[in-house]
Length: 176
Image 1 (tube, one colour):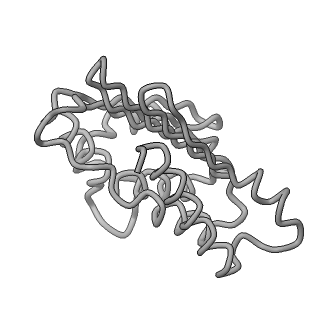
Image 2 (cartoon, rainbow, N blue to C red):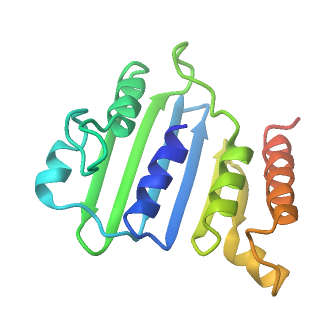
Image 3 (cartoon, rainbow, N blue to C red):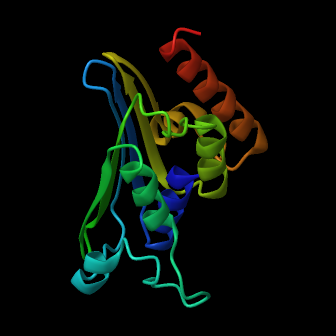
């Protein structure tokens, strides 16, 4: 859910490109989530307070829990979160965890997450890369668009394909 939340924040900030990278390294006992976008970026005063749950740019509520909850989860697993942002250039969020920590939540259903992001935001370029101990799986909507031609990414059949493709790629990466 953290990945979906941050990606939705990127889209709300006008991003047309979102890069999601997951790095797992057994030898370094690390699990890293990196999400970078080309959205509006954040002004310095918001950036300096972005991990405070009582700071948000939304007008519909007074709290912003996405990044603070991610930060809490990372710190509970001997990790942390950094947020870098530059106005008119975009934002980069990096969360790292001790991979073997008993409190680290599993990645979750990344196939459904990517399917939802692609189907609901067909004009946004989404690049996903998952690296585990030297192996990798990649998914990029730009490649998909080239192969599909005139078929829109919002087509329900495309959504099903994205989910199946990512599930298969993730299973192969994990040797399942």
